Length: 287
Ligand code: PMT
Image (tube, rainbow, N blue to C red; front, side, top):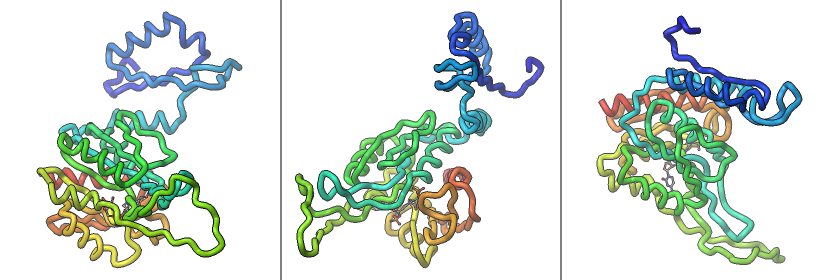
């Protein structure tokens, strides 16, 4: 190990008292000082029968850290606002209107951007996901809250990537009490939400704007229309009716269209891989 010139990651795993031993802790500090990366052990049941800190982290976490260390840092000049997940538009204290977005696409984008050295603010609707390491998370519920959170960061960011599935409408009236079951039908009137990306495109202020288009037909024509109408630099069109594409799963099938008219259709791939393609394309636009 001492002979290698490669970056080294150490994932210590042992009995909790061994791990907390001051001699071991001093040795870990020494290793950190000379440039070795240490991945903190997890907490829980230990092979020796004790409970506590000392578990080998999940293989996925180790792999994530390796990817993080090896990734080229080509986004260090960017501060990116990434949005993810659905918005929830409340009807009463219990019910809301929402959609099938899991947040996986947005979280993959935030993870990739942070790995590549960008400062990342992830503005997320409700999801079951953990914020990726090194990312500032702002949790929101409604489209109006998402809009405000983005505007709060807009002046200091270099770009916005909107993978969130923002509801286009919200109930015109919020009932402070639970809506009771009646005998007849119930009508809910909906009012339009602000189109956040369109508003950003009208201001622009030199920021790079990347949108997504979730389509069920005429993929490229509809996406291109959104690119122009919202004054975007790039749009990632996904046909959400295709197997393995769009909502919820770990994969996506996308076509990237940019403001110069360049179009790139990508095959089925993981959302993590797609995120890297999107940032590679962002760098070509920057150049
Ligand atoms: O979250 P996952 O389960 O991983 O699924 C990923 C995804 C399918 C949600 C994602 O890949 C995707 O396509 N996100 C955009 C969904 C969407 O709202 O598309 P749209 O065509 O309705 O909107 C176009 C763009 O305008 C989007 O960037 C959207 O964020 C933005 N928008 C939409 C409405 C609104 N009121 N304000 C907006 O800014």
